[in-house]
Image (cartoon, rainbow, N blue to C red; front, side, top):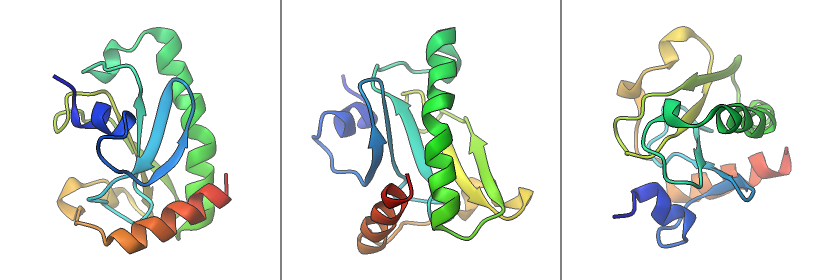
Length: 129
């Protein structure tokens, strides 16, 4: 059975896509910790982040770097924090979270986002890629 993220990859579920290539997809989280919170996923359905082979593990970070830089240009933050939790969806994923302090890295701060705000923010981040 396909994961929620595989359904997003296949276009079965809409997402506010930031960037994709043949191996990875980045899109805005619909329950962001902070505005600009982005998920980066491999298109290959792999459950656990550290089950990615060494090449994929390096490549996902290289793919994420310009996205993190674009998020920094698009929202107010000191830097982009990263979270690899992986319990909520059984598909490897990296959270890129704009932060101003260490306390920002907390899923308790996540709230549903307004779809119009996500659309505008995705456009802004893409323009900064």
